[in-house]
Length: 344
Image (cartoon, rainbow, N blue to C red; front, side):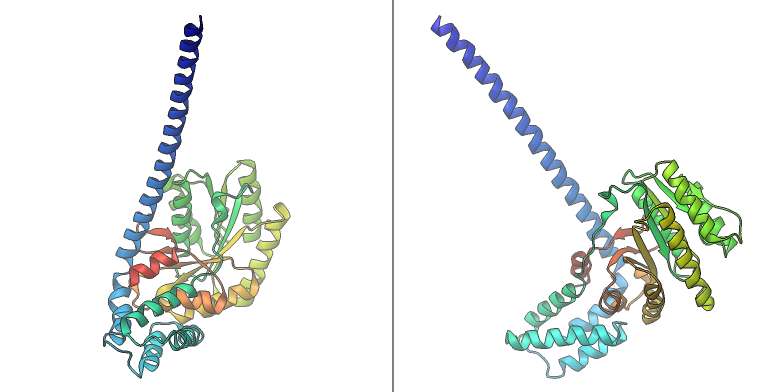
Protein backbone atom coordinates (compact mmCIF):
# COMPACT_ATOMS: atom_id res chain seq x y z
CA UNK A 1 0.00 0.00 0.00
CA UNK A 2 2.84 2.30 0.94
CA UNK A 3 4.56 1.55 -2.37
CA UNK A 4 1.35 2.37 -4.29
CA UNK A 5 1.06 5.70 -2.45
CA UNK A 6 4.72 6.36 -3.07
CA UNK A 7 4.33 5.64 -6.78
CA UNK A 8 1.21 7.81 -6.94
CA UNK A 9 2.94 10.81 -5.32
CA UNK A 10 6.05 10.24 -7.41
CA UNK A 11 3.90 10.53 -10.54
CA UNK A 12 2.25 13.69 -9.19
CA UNK A 13 5.68 15.13 -8.47
CA UNK A 14 6.84 14.20 -11.99
CA UNK A 15 3.87 15.93 -13.65
CA UNK A 16 4.26 18.94 -11.35
CA UNK A 17 7.93 19.27 -12.33
CA UNK A 18 7.01 18.80 -15.99
CA UNK A 19 4.32 21.49 -15.73
CA UNK A 20 6.78 23.89 -14.07
CA UNK A 21 9.33 23.02 -16.71
CA UNK A 22 6.83 23.80 -19.49
CA UNK A 23 5.88 27.08 -17.82
CA UNK A 24 9.55 28.01 -17.50
CA UNK A 25 10.10 27.06 -21.15
CA UNK A 26 7.19 29.29 -22.23
CA UNK A 27 8.56 32.10 -20.07
CA UNK A 28 12.05 31.66 -21.55
CA UNK A 29 10.59 31.58 -25.08
CA UNK A 30 8.64 34.76 -24.36
CA UNK A 31 11.76 36.48 -22.99
CA UNK A 32 13.78 35.28 -25.97
CA UNK A 33 11.06 36.60 -28.29
CA UNK A 34 11.13 40.00 -26.58
CA UNK A 35 14.93 40.08 -26.75
CA UNK A 36 14.87 39.03 -30.41
CA UNK A 37 12.27 41.68 -31.31
CA UNK A 38 14.33 44.27 -29.42
CA UNK A 39 17.43 43.15 -31.33
CA UNK A 40 15.61 43.36 -34.69
CA UNK A 41 14.26 46.82 -33.81
CA UNK A 42 17.73 48.04 -32.79
CA UNK A 43 19.28 46.55 -35.93
CA UNK A 44 16.61 48.29 -38.04
CA UNK A 45 17.44 51.61 -36.34
CA UNK A 46 21.17 51.07 -36.86
CA UNK A 47 20.67 50.29 -40.54
CA UNK A 48 18.32 53.26 -40.99
CA UNK A 49 20.71 55.80 -39.47
CA UNK A 50 23.77 54.27 -41.11
CA UNK A 51 22.23 54.61 -44.58
CA UNK A 52 20.70 58.03 -43.90
CA UNK A 53 23.72 59.81 -42.46
CA UNK A 54 26.31 59.06 -45.16
CA UNK A 55 26.35 62.65 -46.48
CA UNK A 56 26.52 64.12 -42.98
CA UNK A 57 29.24 61.67 -41.93
CA UNK A 58 31.38 62.33 -45.01
CA UNK A 59 31.33 66.10 -44.49
CA UNK A 60 30.77 67.18 -40.89
CA UNK A 61 32.35 64.22 -39.04
CA UNK A 62 35.27 64.03 -41.45
CA UNK A 63 36.19 67.61 -40.51
CA UNK A 64 35.84 66.84 -36.81
CA UNK A 65 38.08 63.77 -37.05
CA UNK A 66 40.70 65.75 -38.97
CA UNK A 67 40.99 68.12 -36.01
CA UNK A 68 41.80 65.15 -33.76
CA UNK A 69 44.10 63.43 -36.29
CA UNK A 70 47.46 64.26 -34.65
CA UNK A 71 48.62 62.14 -31.67
CA UNK A 72 48.42 65.06 -29.22
CA UNK A 73 45.88 67.85 -28.97
CA UNK A 74 46.46 70.86 -31.20
CA UNK A 75 46.77 74.14 -29.27
CA UNK A 76 44.26 75.69 -31.71
CA UNK A 77 41.75 72.86 -31.26
CA UNK A 78 39.00 75.02 -29.70
CA UNK A 79 39.10 77.61 -32.49
CA UNK A 80 39.07 74.88 -35.14
CA UNK A 81 36.16 73.10 -33.46
CA UNK A 82 34.25 76.37 -33.20
CA UNK A 83 34.66 77.02 -36.93
CA UNK A 84 33.43 73.53 -37.88
CA UNK A 85 30.47 73.62 -35.47
CA UNK A 86 29.30 77.05 -36.63
CA UNK A 87 29.63 76.07 -40.30
CA UNK A 88 27.63 72.93 -39.51
CA UNK A 89 24.63 74.92 -38.23
CA UNK A 90 25.10 74.33 -34.51
CA UNK A 91 24.44 78.01 -33.91
CA UNK A 92 26.34 80.18 -31.43
CA UNK A 93 24.51 79.00 -28.30
CA UNK A 94 24.95 75.26 -28.92
CA UNK A 95 28.53 75.77 -30.12
CA UNK A 96 29.50 77.70 -26.99
CA UNK A 97 27.82 75.15 -24.75
CA UNK A 98 29.60 72.13 -26.25
CA UNK A 99 32.99 73.92 -26.32
CA UNK A 100 32.70 75.03 -22.68
CA UNK A 101 31.85 71.52 -21.51
CA UNK A 102 34.59 69.99 -23.67
CA UNK A 103 37.23 72.51 -22.58
CA UNK A 104 36.43 72.16 -18.87
CA UNK A 105 36.29 68.37 -19.14
CA UNK A 106 39.65 67.80 -20.79
CA UNK A 107 41.36 70.22 -18.38
CA UNK A 108 39.79 68.57 -15.35
CA UNK A 109 40.63 65.07 -16.61
CA UNK A 110 44.03 66.19 -17.95
CA UNK A 111 43.32 64.68 -21.38
CA UNK A 112 46.20 65.27 -23.79
CA UNK A 113 45.86 62.45 -26.33
CA UNK A 114 43.71 63.23 -29.38
CA UNK A 115 42.01 59.83 -29.58
CA UNK A 116 40.83 60.04 -25.95
CA UNK A 117 39.76 63.67 -26.47
CA UNK A 118 37.69 62.66 -29.52
CA UNK A 119 35.86 60.02 -27.46
CA UNK A 120 35.20 62.65 -24.78
CA UNK A 121 33.91 65.09 -27.41
CA UNK A 122 31.56 62.40 -28.74
CA UNK A 123 30.31 61.79 -25.19
CA UNK A 124 29.54 65.51 -24.75
CA UNK A 125 27.58 65.58 -28.02
CA UNK A 126 25.46 62.69 -26.79
CA UNK A 127 24.83 64.41 -23.44
CA UNK A 128 23.56 67.49 -25.27
CA UNK A 129 20.75 65.43 -26.80
CA UNK A 130 19.71 63.82 -23.52
CA UNK A 131 16.54 65.62 -22.49
CA UNK A 132 13.21 63.94 -21.56
CA UNK A 133 11.87 62.17 -24.63
CA UNK A 134 8.93 59.95 -23.67
CA UNK A 135 7.08 58.30 -26.54
CA UNK A 136 3.82 57.90 -24.66
CA UNK A 137 1.53 57.11 -27.62
CA UNK A 138 1.96 53.36 -27.24
CA UNK A 139 1.22 53.32 -23.52
CA UNK A 140 -1.24 56.17 -23.09
CA UNK A 141 -4.77 55.31 -21.96
CA UNK A 142 -6.28 58.42 -23.57
CA UNK A 143 -8.29 57.43 -26.63
CA UNK A 144 -7.94 58.99 -29.06
CA UNK A 145 -4.39 60.18 -28.50
CA UNK A 146 -4.41 63.55 -30.26
CA UNK A 147 -1.28 64.77 -32.06
CA UNK A 148 -1.21 68.30 -33.46
CA UNK A 149 1.32 68.89 -36.26
CA UNK A 150 2.65 72.40 -36.93
CA UNK A 151 5.31 73.81 -39.24
CA UNK A 152 5.76 76.12 -42.21
CA UNK A 153 4.85 75.19 -45.77
CA UNK A 154 7.58 73.42 -47.71
CA UNK A 155 9.22 71.45 -44.88
CA UNK A 156 7.46 68.20 -45.78
CA UNK A 157 4.68 68.51 -43.19
CA UNK A 158 1.93 66.59 -45.01
CA UNK A 159 4.31 63.83 -46.09
CA UNK A 160 5.54 63.58 -42.49
CA UNK A 161 1.96 63.24 -41.25
CA UNK A 162 1.44 60.34 -43.66
CA UNK A 163 4.67 58.68 -42.48
CA UNK A 164 3.74 59.12 -38.82
CA UNK A 165 0.27 57.67 -39.42
CA UNK A 166 1.68 54.73 -41.37
CA UNK A 167 4.28 54.11 -38.65
CA UNK A 168 1.62 53.76 -35.94
CA UNK A 169 -0.75 51.83 -38.16
CA UNK A 170 1.99 49.24 -38.60
CA UNK A 171 2.22 49.00 -34.81
CA UNK A 172 -1.42 47.96 -34.72
CA UNK A 173 -2.95 51.33 -33.87
CA UNK A 174 -6.13 52.62 -35.50
CA UNK A 175 -5.29 56.06 -36.89
CA UNK A 176 -7.36 58.92 -38.31
CA UNK A 177 -6.07 62.04 -40.07
CA UNK A 178 -7.61 65.51 -39.88
CA UNK A 179 -7.13 67.86 -42.87
CA UNK A 180 -6.87 71.04 -40.82
CA UNK A 181 -4.93 73.05 -43.42
CA UNK A 182 -7.91 74.47 -45.31
CA UNK A 183 -5.91 77.41 -46.64
CA UNK A 184 -4.37 75.26 -49.39
CA UNK A 185 -6.63 73.06 -51.50
CA UNK A 186 -3.54 71.03 -52.42
CA UNK A 187 -2.95 70.18 -48.75
CA UNK A 188 -6.44 68.67 -48.44
CA UNK A 189 -6.04 66.71 -51.68
CA UNK A 190 -2.59 65.47 -50.67
CA UNK A 191 -3.64 64.20 -47.26
CA UNK A 192 -6.73 62.51 -48.75
CA UNK A 193 -4.53 60.85 -51.37
CA UNK A 194 -2.23 59.48 -48.65
CA UNK A 195 -5.27 58.23 -46.77
CA UNK A 196 -6.56 56.33 -49.80
CA UNK A 197 -3.14 54.90 -50.62
CA UNK A 198 -2.48 53.53 -47.14
CA UNK A 199 -6.06 52.84 -46.07
CA UNK A 200 -6.11 55.46 -43.32
CA UNK A 201 -9.37 57.41 -42.81
CA UNK A 202 -9.20 61.18 -43.35
CA UNK A 203 -11.65 63.71 -41.94
CA UNK A 204 -11.90 66.75 -44.22
CA UNK A 205 -14.15 69.57 -45.38
CA UNK A 206 -13.99 71.89 -48.35
CA UNK A 207 -11.22 74.38 -49.12
CA UNK A 208 -11.56 77.72 -47.29
CA UNK A 209 -13.72 76.65 -44.34
CA UNK A 210 -12.72 77.53 -40.78
CA UNK A 211 -9.93 75.07 -39.86
CA UNK A 212 -11.06 75.07 -36.23
CA UNK A 213 -14.43 73.62 -37.29
CA UNK A 214 -12.64 70.83 -39.18
CA UNK A 215 -10.53 70.03 -36.14
CA UNK A 216 -13.48 70.16 -33.72
CA UNK A 217 -15.58 67.78 -35.83
CA UNK A 218 -12.63 65.46 -36.48
CA UNK A 219 -12.00 65.10 -32.74
CA UNK A 220 -15.67 64.22 -32.18
CA UNK A 221 -15.55 61.76 -35.09
CA UNK A 222 -12.39 60.06 -33.79
CA UNK A 223 -14.02 59.63 -30.37
CA UNK A 224 -17.18 58.25 -31.98
CA UNK A 225 -15.17 55.80 -34.12
CA UNK A 226 -13.00 54.85 -31.11
CA UNK A 227 -9.74 55.60 -32.89
CA UNK A 228 -6.46 55.17 -31.03
CA UNK A 229 -4.73 58.16 -32.61
CA UNK A 230 -5.87 61.35 -34.35
CA UNK A 231 -3.19 63.31 -36.23
CA UNK A 232 -4.15 66.89 -37.13
CA UNK A 233 -2.60 68.88 -39.98
CA UNK A 234 -2.46 72.69 -39.72
CA UNK A 235 -1.63 75.62 -42.00
CA UNK A 236 1.92 76.98 -42.10
CA UNK A 237 1.97 80.37 -43.79
CA UNK A 238 4.45 82.48 -41.84
CA UNK A 239 4.07 85.48 -44.17
CA UNK A 240 0.78 86.07 -42.34
CA UNK A 241 2.18 85.29 -38.90
CA UNK A 242 -0.36 87.05 -36.67
CA UNK A 243 -3.31 85.39 -38.41
CA UNK A 244 -1.62 81.98 -38.22
CA UNK A 245 -0.95 82.35 -34.49
CA UNK A 246 -4.57 83.27 -33.79
CA UNK A 247 -5.70 80.30 -35.90
CA UNK A 248 -3.49 77.87 -33.96
CA UNK A 249 -4.70 79.25 -30.63
CA UNK A 250 -8.29 78.76 -31.74
CA UNK A 251 -7.57 75.18 -32.85
CA UNK A 252 -6.02 74.47 -29.45
CA UNK A 253 -9.13 75.87 -27.71
CA UNK A 254 -11.63 73.82 -29.73
CA UNK A 255 -9.63 70.62 -29.15
CA UNK A 256 -9.79 71.29 -25.41
CA UNK A 257 -13.57 71.76 -25.61
CA UNK A 258 -13.88 68.15 -26.74
CA UNK A 259 -10.94 66.81 -24.80
CA UNK A 260 -9.61 69.04 -21.95
CA UNK A 261 -6.21 67.28 -21.73
CA UNK A 262 -5.56 67.39 -25.48
CA UNK A 263 -3.61 67.84 -27.64
CA UNK A 264 -1.49 65.19 -25.98
CA UNK A 265 1.45 66.01 -28.24
CA UNK A 266 2.27 68.99 -30.45
CA UNK A 267 5.06 68.24 -32.92
CA UNK A 268 6.82 70.81 -35.07
CA UNK A 269 8.16 69.64 -38.44
CA UNK A 270 11.56 71.14 -39.33
CA UNK A 271 13.67 70.87 -42.48
CA UNK A 272 17.28 69.91 -41.63
CA UNK A 273 18.49 71.46 -44.89
CA UNK A 274 17.66 75.07 -44.01
CA UNK A 275 19.73 75.12 -40.83
CA UNK A 276 19.29 78.03 -38.42
CA UNK A 277 16.18 79.25 -40.27
CA UNK A 278 14.48 76.18 -38.77
CA UNK A 279 15.31 77.46 -35.29
CA UNK A 280 13.73 80.84 -36.06
CA UNK A 281 10.60 79.07 -37.32
CA UNK A 282 10.46 76.87 -34.23
CA UNK A 283 10.72 79.92 -31.96
CA UNK A 284 7.65 81.51 -33.54
CA UNK A 285 5.59 78.38 -32.93
CA UNK A 286 6.98 77.65 -29.44
CA UNK A 287 6.16 81.22 -28.36
CA UNK A 288 2.54 80.48 -29.30
CA UNK A 289 2.01 76.96 -28.00
CA UNK A 290 3.54 74.14 -26.00
CA UNK A 291 5.71 72.25 -28.50
CA UNK A 292 6.40 68.79 -27.05
CA UNK A 293 8.74 67.50 -29.75
CA UNK A 294 10.19 67.99 -33.20
CA UNK A 295 10.25 65.88 -36.34
CA UNK A 296 13.32 66.61 -38.45
CA UNK A 297 12.93 65.94 -42.18
CA UNK A 298 15.40 65.66 -45.09
CA UNK A 299 18.25 64.66 -42.78
CA UNK A 300 19.75 62.53 -45.54
CA UNK A 301 20.25 65.55 -47.81
CA UNK A 302 22.35 67.76 -45.57
CA UNK A 303 26.01 67.88 -44.55
CA UNK A 304 25.10 70.14 -41.61
CA UNK A 305 23.84 68.12 -38.65
CA UNK A 306 24.06 70.94 -36.14
CA UNK A 307 20.36 71.71 -36.41
CA UNK A 308 19.61 68.60 -34.31
CA UNK A 309 21.72 70.01 -31.45
CA UNK A 310 20.37 73.56 -31.82
CA UNK A 311 16.76 72.38 -31.50
CA UNK A 312 17.55 70.69 -28.21
CA UNK A 313 19.95 73.29 -26.76
CA UNK A 314 18.26 76.53 -27.85
CA UNK A 315 14.62 75.50 -27.49
CA UNK A 316 14.73 72.51 -25.12
CA UNK A 317 12.54 70.60 -27.58
CA UNK A 318 13.39 66.89 -27.92
CA UNK A 319 13.80 65.43 -31.39
CA UNK A 320 11.13 62.71 -31.53
CA UNK A 321 11.35 61.41 -35.09
CA UNK A 322 13.49 61.83 -38.19
CA UNK A 323 12.47 61.50 -41.81
CA UNK A 324 14.74 60.73 -44.74
CA UNK A 325 13.89 60.03 -48.35
CA UNK A 326 10.57 59.81 -50.16
CA UNK A 327 9.47 56.32 -49.15
CA UNK A 328 6.72 55.98 -46.54
CA UNK A 329 9.06 53.80 -44.46
CA UNK A 330 11.88 56.40 -44.43
CA UNK A 331 10.87 57.40 -40.92
CA UNK A 332 12.05 56.38 -37.44
CA UNK A 333 11.90 57.30 -33.77
CA UNK A 334 14.99 59.36 -33.03
CA UNK A 335 17.52 57.52 -30.87
CA UNK A 336 20.30 59.89 -29.78
CA UNK A 337 22.83 57.16 -28.97
CA UNK A 338 22.36 55.36 -32.29
CA UNK A 339 22.50 58.73 -34.07
CA UNK A 340 25.83 59.69 -32.47
CA UNK A 341 27.33 56.20 -32.82
CA UNK A 342 26.55 56.20 -36.53
CA UNK A 343 28.08 59.63 -37.03
CA UNK A 344 31.38 58.48 -35.55
